[in-house]
Length: 403
Image 1 (cartoon, one colour):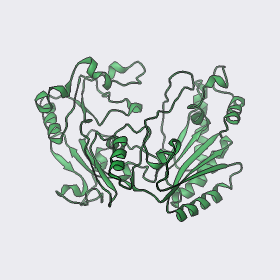
Image 2 (cartoon, one colour; image 1 turned 30 degrees about the vertical axis):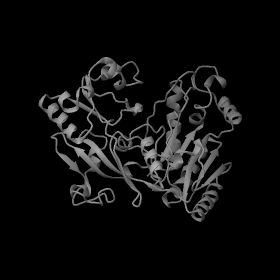
Image 3 (cartoon, one colour; image 1 turned 180 degrees about the vertical axis):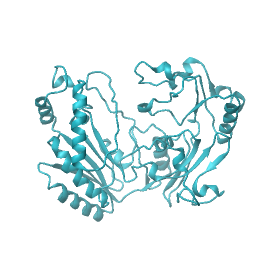
Image 4 (cartoon, helix red, strand yellow; image 1 turned 90 degrees about the horizontal axis):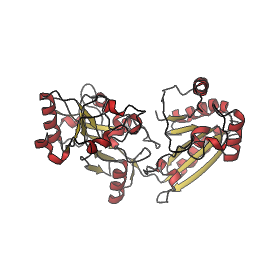
């Protein structure tokens, strides 16, 4: 291994491996400890590493950057596996006239944003928050964002993969050397293979094409508050129609706790055991000026088009009693404030400050896939609330509609 990648890029000392531990493991970090880490810088080095691993039956655990801390960071599922860390692979190519980029695993959202800004390309990326993660890694994990390009896997086109045998596979039109349409058209003859390498260990993905969004002439951030728990049913049903007809792109919804948890602590509203009583929730919402539900999305395009979309949105949601709506609009070139930056494809390094119980905190998410029907979700939400409350927890809930 050291001959292939160089002495300094094979790590086995405990202090060097600390960053590959699961940072949020509930007392089980040692069960997922790696035996070492290898950091190749090229496809040829990856092929060399795989050849050695095959000969010695050494299990490898591949990470782009290992910063998906919600899924265990860079820690391998199999104790003693060697981490194949691709953070040194940081090349970016882009074609502004066709609105795409080709990135390697070590490219973060911050890196890609800076690249586009430095080149003065009139293109937006769709980013997660925070933006320190790998564009490639997030795409392979079916990550999501906030703009019309929020389905990251859906806006990926073309993939380079090193198979366990050391063979290099390029999906779609990439099978033809030098084909300029590789990052533009997903398909070729026969089956589409890209999905085989998402959330899988069938190969080491070393490059993907990513579609970028042309900077819009105008965009508006629409935010709404609904005051009652049951308002989520008409909120979702109204949003569904606007999503299906193309008026609204990606949209996010948060319940009162998801909004409050980053801005206050539980003890300010209730110091008893068990979940907050309804009276405390009502007081929290009133004093913080928030609703039971908050909805947010962006509208993008030419100014006249956005105005028409906004009129349709206002007319549709006005049928829900008590809905409060605010709109902030920006022209091309306007400065975007931090609270709206991700809706404009601007990554940040800010973490959501979750100190609901006091002190540093985090959250566990159980992301379910549910049809976009209000009554069905309300029933699910109430059943989930019962489960959380029975265990003594308040219900922290958020929804995203990207597809």
